[in-house]
Image (cartoon, rainbow, N blue to C red; front, side, top):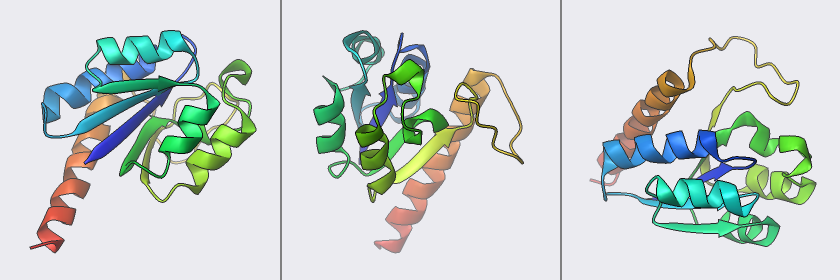
Length: 143
């Protein structure tokens, strides 16, 4: 399974997500760090991503080469992350057939009703458990 983790700005959220994914899945998944800037990409690679790429073209190209896309809800909102996430990036992410696992972190004036706000480490843990469940269901259906 190939998982893209997307982040921008300082890469702190992506770093936490990549670290948690690597801790739980070890080397059984391939993690691709996709940053809106080189600092975000570098932080995710240092946290354990197998590869990293930066910028709009890398983001658009890789959306149809991954099984899962992980990030905050802002990755599907044009001009989020203080303008770092372009409308074309948001469209490519939203249009991808990959399963998207998004955290409801509110930095783009978007509130997802019905979600319970938790600290980032707790949300990362919930995301990993959800990914494990999906991967388990997929492997059972292939038997």
